[in-house]
Length: 177
Image (cartoon, rainbow, N blue to C red; front, side, top):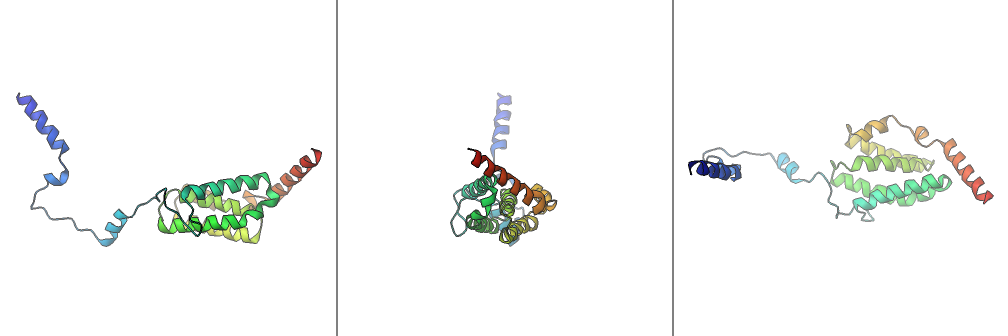
């Protein structure tokens, strides 16, 4: 019977909140406003929040980047036609990064979006790619994707010769069929 009492007491003690066990004479912990704000601010965006002028969700931003990259890879000669859509996606990504500056999903999306812009081989695309890369480097300096991005250039990622060769081969294949 004595053993059961000890076991029950240990169980109740383990289930009791720590604050209930604290002495009433202990001094309260004071937090600065910054600490309270950091504790209250979520680090990741909720899936049902929408960003930018087009009110894109996180999934919408991700899909837009992935789908555009697929289309550009399939038909590199027409990559620049996706510029307007990617600008709206970039606007949503920048809004997301401003509202949730520590969200761990942002670096990969900024990295991939910069590649989609580079694939266009236009001065406008190069400028927007640099905006994405600046966001990545400034806001996530120690992230894996930042490390990879620092070692890249547009010419290394999407060389013009490769794009021209792949489009020429696609044209030749279409003519043969």
